[in-house]
Length: 85
Figure 1 (cartoon, rainbow, N blue to C red):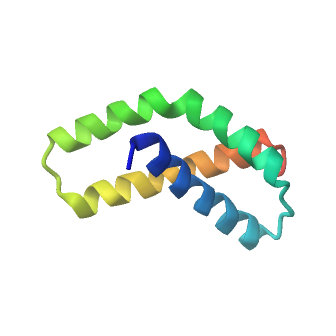
Figure 2 (figure 1 turned 120 degrees about the horizontal axis):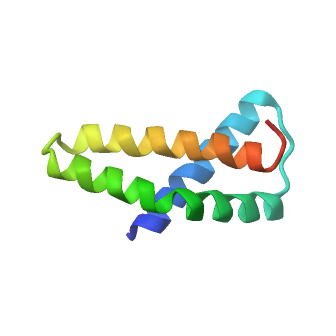
Figure 3 (figure 1 turned 90 degrees about the vertical axis):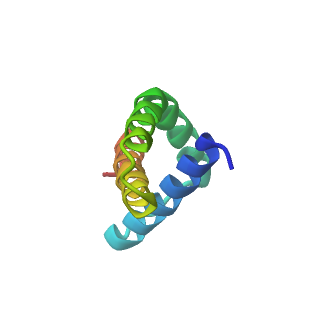
């Protein structure tokens, strides 16, 4: 799985979990547009963080936690971009 797909899949799950928790109605087309924009804007920074983390030999569980934290941050940015949060 490539980095883009891995990151967008995790982020979209986080978007829906946050929306469900906050009882936000979502428009799928608007989600796709905002998600693409936000991930594209943040992608280079995130890849650099992954490279740094991978080079630190911190282990798979830590890398998974890093990716989850990044996906949650991107989900919040996506919802803010959509102006629903």
